[in-house]
Length: 500
Image (cartoon, rainbow, N blue to C red):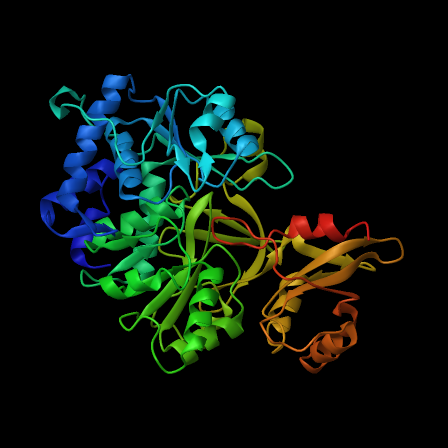
């Protein structure tokens, strides 16, 4: 991290970081979207006016404000306005509907709820009324406005809980994850320390700003003083024009994003899909080693992958100058201040970027061990160089005839098959074996049809032990994915195939 960024990282609150960056480089661009530019100073000034408007509506320090908004300049301004007030904000992914949104509003006891109105054909205002939400207001093109001279002093305690994020709800209710300004600043600093951007870079935010990655990425922009292009709706090839027009140098989001860029590159081999692009980076889902090699070989850019979660936005990250073998096979190294401990194969974490727990005290007690380490539920080990290798999830271990089988190991090998575009391996109940191994795969266009015998023969040539071979193969048009970082939803596959 350069000297200026290191000095800025000592900010006690997010608002202090905004004010210090605005004073340092007021006229430099921060956010670029649809022909609009918001500078660092404009963010500070506009967020104060919006904070004053919110104050006039009754929002005070500590007031819980929920918002369910797409990735827009206005969303970022509203979020920093709430940070200026010292309100407790609870971002909700814009794709969530009644069940998840209703739970978040009730559990957080939100006193206000900002919505985009009708967005992508769905009426969020009507849903808010249906759920009996309090203090509903629209915050899409227009935001509350007021006189900043009427505001109370900005918050000074960066360790107070002011953020409630939500884990993805699957078969149970989502968890409310408690964060502070300091934990989000630590996460963003970790990301910046690993990626080593410069003031000449141009980044991109193509994922929901309501995701924990929103403040994580924005902190990096504030530390290094460079801009990012915002995408309200991300789809390729449509988004490529904006990447090219703004000269984006750093892109990504998660493994699914890498695959989408690679697919576009393969349409015109040898011609860079984004000429200025030098780095793909992200996290949020496992990265197969073969995908890393394909991106570097075919796109001619570096790929650095990391490991994070809602509870800890940045745990490890690959560095651009890491050895290619380590970039392909690991999730990178933890930054200074992040402690990783492996207990019975499980990854456990302690450090400033770790959340303060959950809204439910019982969930908090279950999540942390007696020494204050967060139990992640992920399995892995550290290399001699300090890089982290993830091998699966505790709940993703398939137990077949008493033998533990890693789904991740089989998935990585399946992705080497030329007729397989993506794969998910799950365990299904079996009266004789306890669980059987089921491979669910997507095929690229024009690929030859697959058989179980052919797939298992391929896996044997790749060195997979016989007792780990899939006993069942399912070919699908598309694996079910979440709406944020496009993770494969294995619980849906288990529900679909368990009774067959």
